[in-house]
Image 1 (cartoon, helix red, strand yellow):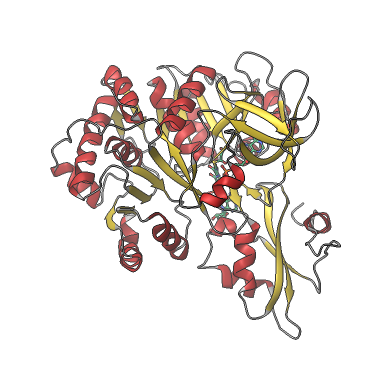
Image 2 (cartoon, rainbow, N blue to C red):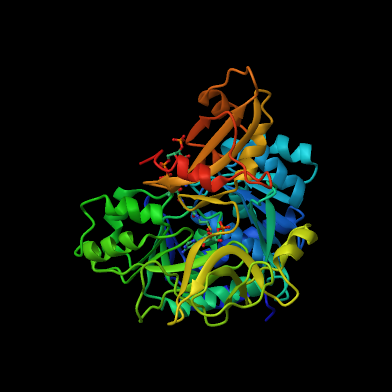
Length: 505
Ligand code: MLC
Ligand code: AMP
């Protein structure tokens, strides 16, 4: 057996036979055996389409069981899976195609023409389609294909996936994630969170990010558990399923919305054994309120695209609100001085660094960016600020990176500022995150118009419309004569955050 993660999954999948792998609310179901057979045919289709080991397979598709089978088929074929947020605009997708040069782009059936134009312009990818009802050209081909031969052997350090994360420079960076990264994290989490074949995960997250794709699906596969694949998060649908589920993974916005519903009671959640939260900070108030309403202490964990999961509150021990728990068994977490990178004593606030088999191997074709954050000693600079308390719990207190987290999605201000600044009427802009009752932080733009320019909020939003995914667009735009600056000329975002703190309250 090679280190191809798919082979590890395939062992579990064989062992589970006809047991349920995934179901959908509209009554579709894959047993593990059927999933394996479909993955084998999809892998054959990938080779037929010219996908070689190491090639990238990009997918901008809606959530469906077949989308996960495509991910598994990509691993089986030795290729590199590159999931793309369905909210990305054509302009954004074009960047990813140019940068990653995938051999294949799989898109939604309705987007086939636009995708074909983008792929042609970028000069690389072939295009196939995948719909949510097992439809589209990819599944048609799979229906006619014979199963592929053995999975392609891969080394532990070979790439399994590239996930793009925006950067402080405004140019999204492709985090290169290996088979070792994914296998070690899936094993750790399945064990740490006590996943078994009896678990049924209510899966409500998107599957183009670490959380919904790797944390959720890889853990389920590792344990041979099953999952209910909801097309998107919907309070009514979750309320209906809670009595039949055993676990739920969410971001704080999801828990906030569940708490607003009076159907959230101990009785309704009695069958559930575990609620986990991550991707953004869960407030201690929400943690306490959820416990009072349901009897369940949400288990908060901390991760990143570049590292998968780093820390987790314990399964059996005390889950402390406002902390992200302990480093996972094979992960080292340390707090260092931001400049010197020397380790700080317990209790002192500094930069969080992590090292372990979970840490990615670098940014795709960005060796300098990689060197800035991934050091020779193996530690990765997370950009998060925190401390470790006397009992060993990690606390995150802020971010050193200029990043807004809205509803669990990362928004890098630089990317938005660059597009706003391209407007003729704009002298400069600053994008900040301020408290938002639903999303945690709301993306907010502060714009300095050029002298004499007539510019309104709508003009700015319209200019961003087809350039940036909707979740990156500011909820509000404010106009000022000058941006506050410090003596070095750097924009004082803290001052702006204070000034606009009540915008959404
Ligand atoms: C949707 N919208 C958002 C948004 N989500 N705007 C800002 N921030 C968001 N997060 C937009 C929609 O396009 C829509 O715009 C409008 O807001 C209302 O949408 P909605 O119906 O309220 O949103 P909904 O579809 O319910 O989505 C909310 C959500 C979703 C919280 C369920 O954002 C979500 O699934 N978030 C999870 C993100 C995630 O998985 N992150 C993991 C990253 S991995 P309009 O104009 O059309 O009305 C990671 C590592 C780790 O961070 O540690 O896990
Ligand atoms: P991403 O780049 O989308 O993977 O987001 C990673 C970032 O999300 C981390 O660097 C943190 O800033 C943040 N994050 C993830 N989990 C948590 C958490 N439990 N608490 C606070 N921040 C978190």
